[in-house]
Image 1: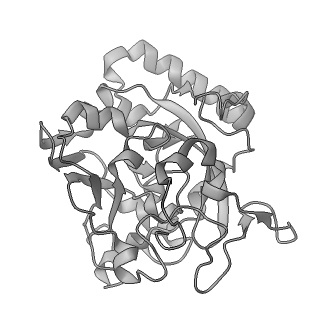
Image 2: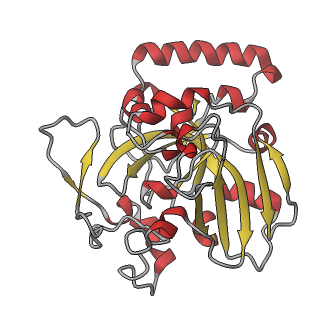
Image 3: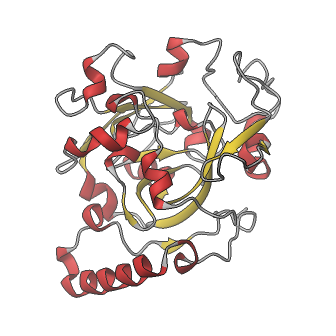
Length: 307
């Protein structure tokens, strides 16, 4: 499976030269500091992953300045404009439900037991725009295995932070806060599913879901919940915010599927951010191009009904 998305890209290929050289200096300094440089703050030194796509990544500026993160506002530039006030240190994630070792886990504790990888993934928004993002993170399965998934667990539920004094969008009833999402257990345990804490080998910016967000590259972007504070293992299908808002438009699975149109627009093509006003739309790939690895998860399912 790991050979499917093998990339020959290095960090020096996807990062501007000046930024790359500067990061090398930072890494050298962090190595000298040893234990004083924590993974939660540094977000550096990720190893290359065989799961990366060979598509050209978007720039750091494009990735961080064009976002949906309604906790900071509904405009694409609102997250970058308003997320600076968010406090991400200290940070803890409550892990509960059908697990052997429930509890509140400090972010440093979570990161201390994993190997960070760079994953250059395609990202497809349900609004029919797309990017290619070089995430830094680790497989969600590594964390779930550490806390011990009980046999009766079938789903994984996630919740985003609620802090309206720092997240101005939560001062309005745009959505029913907290933002919620969920995966079936086999989706959550799939090696493509990661928890990200960085992009371009730098700490994840607040507007992109700092300090810890989910990334599920074969699903529409709203499934990749940001700023996670709770993970719950459950036997029943959990609530998912956009599915709650309008189940006709936003299914629980929300796999990228060009054959199933959104009720208000086609999903057959997409607009790549950064391509310019005159760039042509490109065809959307089934499962966002990751079908060889994930199609088997949905064998026998009617993906037009269970969308």
